[in-house]
Length: 585
Image (tube, rainbow, N blue to C red; front, side):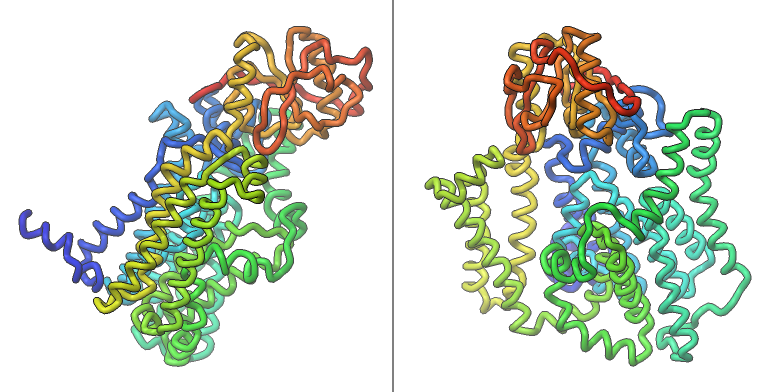
C-alpha cells in the first residue's frame, strides 16, 4: 500500500500516461471532480431540465411510470428512458435537486472511461489517457455532463455502440461486442431516436473492404451469417419499450394516447429530421457557430491534424479512416436536417478525441498552436476581468444586463478573470521549465468549471427559477388557494406551493385565457398567474397584482375581480389538467 502511494502521485505517470491503473484512477477522479462538483447546489434550470425533473417526480409520486406526464398531460416528445433514470434516483434519494443531474453525470463519466479504454486497446495506454483528458477538457462535453438533458445519455449509448463496433471490426473481437453495439444502438433509439448513428461506421468500413487496402495492424473479419443478427438484437432492445407502449396505448381506447403514439413514432423522428419546425439553421451552422466555440480546445487542433490523418489513411491505418469517416458522416447527417441544435453533434466528440490523441505530442510541438490555445485562455480571462470590473463600477452596458437578467455576478467574473490572468502570467514565467503555454487551458478551465459549479450556481439559481414569484405570492396568498397557469413553463408547476390547474402546454394562449375565465367562474377563489403582457379581452389586466420578474418576464396574478363580464367560448374543447402542490423539493 505504501509503495502504491508514490505511484499514484507520480508526475512521470501523469505526463507519460503509460500506467493503466494510474490512468483509470485519475481519469475517474478528475471526471468525478469536474462533473459531480456542485451536485445538489442548484435546481433544474430552463429550458429542458424542469420538464424532465417534473415528469420524473410525477412518475414516482403517481406510481405511473410508463407514460411521461407533464403536469398531468401526456408528454409525447421523447420516450421515457431518460426520465426513468431521473425518477430512479429521485425514488432512492427523495430529492429532485439531488437526483436530476445524476444520470447525465454518470453517462459522462462512463463515456470518458469508454474513450480511454478503446484508445488504449487501439493504440496504447498513453493514447487512451490523452483521449480521456482531451474529452474532459472539451467545453461541450463537460457542459452536457453537468446538464440534465437527454444528450449526455444518448452520447454514452452511441459511444458504447462505436466502442463495440471498433472492438469487433478492428481488434477481431468476439461477436459479443458486435451484438452489444447493436443492443446499445437500440437503447439509443428509444432514448432519442438517433441512437443508430454508430451504423454509419459501417460505410467507411465497407469502402475500405472494397478498396482492397490492407489493414496494417491485423486481420479483418470476413462474411458470416452472424452479421445479419445485429439488426435483430437492435430491434429486440427497441421492443423492450416499443411493444409494451403499443399494447398499453391500444387498451386505453383514448384518442390522447393514440396521439401520443403517433407523435412519438412519426412527428418526433422522421418529421423532426426531414421537415423540422423549429431551431431552423443553415447547412453550415455547426461549422461556423458550434464547433469553433463549444469544441474548444479540440477544434483548434484540427488544422494541424489534417496532414497526419491523411498520411495515416494512405498508409492503411483503418483506425483513423474508420473513426474520422464516422465523425464526418455524423456532421453531414445533422447538417442536412433543417433543424439544428449545438448538442446534436455531441456524440462526435469522444471519437474525435480518440483520433486526436495519437498525434497530440507531435502537434503540440507547434509554437503557433501553443500560442493559439494560450491566446484563447488569455482573451477569455481578459473578457471575464473586464466585465467584472466594469460591473463593479456600474458601466452602462453591465447595468443594462443586470436589469435584464436580474443578477450581479461581478465579483465572480472578476475573480475568475484574475485567476485566468494569473495562470497566463505564471506560465510565461516558468516556460524555462518546459511547461508549454497550452497548459493554460488545463490549468484554468477546471478552476472555471469548479467556480461556475459552486459560486456560479448560487448566483444563478434564483434567476433561473420562479422561486421569487412564489415567495412574493406566499406573502399575501394562503397556501390553500387554487392557482391556474396560462402560457407557462414547466418550472412553474415544479416550484408551485399551490395546487395547479393548466389548460395544455401547446394550447394557443387565446384559448387558454378563455378556458381560465371559465375555470375562475366556477372557482371564484381561484387565482390566475400569467405574463403581464398577455393580450386578452377576458380580464382587466390593470386589476392584477405584480408578483415579480422570472425568466425575463413580469408575472401578474389575477383574482376574480379582474374577470370581465363576458368572454368568448373556446373554439375547441380545452382540457383542464390538475396537479398537487409540489413546492420545494
